[in-house]
Image (tube, rainbow, N blue to C red; front, side):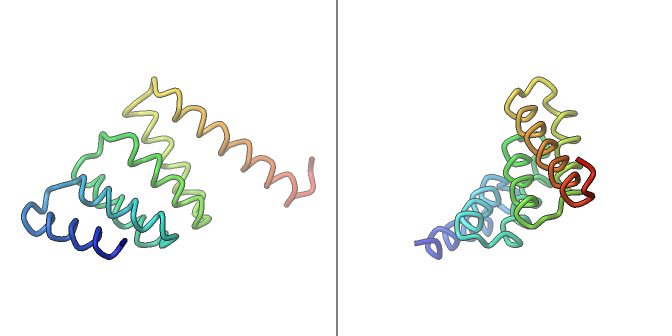
Amino acid sequence: MPEAALKSFAKALELDPSYDSAYYNIGLVHKDNEQFEEAAKAFEQSLELDSDYSETYRKLAKIYQELKQYDKVTQIFEKLSEIDPDNEDAKEAKNEFDERQNSWSCKWLSQC
């Protein structure tokens, strides 16, 4: 099933290379199949075409968490707060991420 979806989105991109939703959906397919590197690339391509869609940033942040690329997660939350400062879901996700990071840092540094 995922292969058929990926083929459909690839066909859509052949017809319209600027179709950012196709890249977003490709990212979702890869995310659901735990192909995180491929998902990140697709979400990044989607953002190149439409950098104001906050849901793409949220998905990409989750992918980078899976990949343990925490510096990129922080950058995404900063960008998201710029483009959608009133997004309560994004604020909550950032707070959860910060809490996890602080907990991990404390455990790793044995300072808590």
